[in-house]
Amino acid sequence: MAHILIVEDDINLGQVIFQELKRHNHEVELVENAEAALVRVNKYIYDLMITDLKLPGIDGIELLKKVKATNQGTIVLVMTGYASVDTAVVAMKHGAQDFIQKPFGLSELVQKIDDALSIKRMRNEIDYLRHAQEDIIYRTSDIVGVSSALKKVLKMAEKVAKADSTLLITGETGVGKGLIAGAIHHNSSRASNNFVQVNCAALPHNILESELFGHEKGAFTGAVRTRVGRVEQANMGTIFLDEIGDMDIGLQAKILRVLEDREFERVGGEKTIKVDVRVIAATNQDLFSLVKQGRFREDLYYRINVVNIHIPPIRQRKEDIEPLANYFARKYCREFNKPRMEIAPDALRALIEYDWPGNVREIRNCIERAVLLAEGDLIRLQDISILRPNNAVAISANETPSAQNQKNLSTLALTEREMILDALRKNDWVQKDAAAMLGISKRVIHYKIKKYGITHPRWIKNR
Image (cartoon, rainbow, N blue to C red; front, top):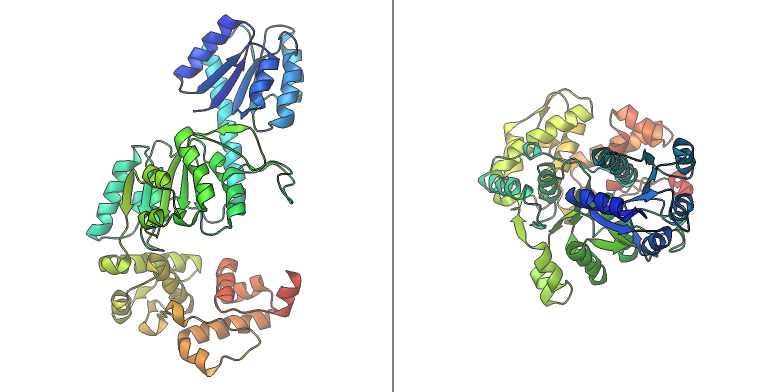
């Protein structure tokens, strides 16, 4: 669905186009002149405008200029039946996407509109990817596990994928809520469009509002250009609001409006933008308790909790630990360019006996460390480093680990830290060169440096 404005003084032709586009499930408005069009454009941001070039009063070229001056994201198609191509070329120089010559068939017009909207979605996707980090969409078959609890979750995910309803996914941190959301999107009718993820707990309220809804140029200090928000980038696709329980209650009202009315305004903007997005929310909190505390809107709670999918923690589905550990071992062997490794029986028993408070995410990090430091083709018990959160410490590159730190850090972790420090010193503290020496990626060494709190005066100075 797209929000389309038709500007045509021939009311009969305008009505024919209007009805045809409505038949294709677009939200359509029809006006007879440029003056009426500008009134609408000052209130709404349209996905696409179709305008005749020959209009009473302000002509189509002037209308095009005014629209593109304030609504650069609106795609404009022009209709022309006189002086044809020359006038159409002028229109395209002023920002029109395409033109169609009268008389035309409705199928030709619909095809041009579809092509133009595809270009708009592609631009939104490019803008999204410029700001995305590691957003990966997983198919159901990509989700690793054999437990009956996980199979129940996947079965429900497949069932609701086609329904296009709003969903709430619950579970502890690290259980894979994003994986399930991605699987639902991938198996839905929206699979060919964007799957946009936003972590509501990762950003302060004012930044999260701009991230979600975008902002107009000059809306605040540093807003040097208009920015398309994640909700708009997800148009025709799915937006995944992770940790929605941490969202400011004022911002919750705007999300409710997107769900109820499918519209919003950018930060600093007055024009309404229409969107067609599926919302999947997730939380590790008890939202109903937050509602009773006045920290979460009751109306939003019931609106997102149409279908609830709960993902049990790893300690309640121990059968999934072995296939997950083997999956991550293969993954990191490929990433670190190492031969395939097996996990020794005693190491596997240790993995299964541990409760994994960090769930799948903690298993992934544990196996990544093991693959990085293990020798040969076997991950042994001594290669497994399970550090509980309250035992983790940060050590500066310039300090010697204290007796307490040595007690808290496993021998393996200390060895890993020393290897990284040695590589950094030998490569004049250039991280990418140290990573190359260790045979790991820049991303991995950056993670290790952050994990161990390694610092250097050069890095601080260059920040």
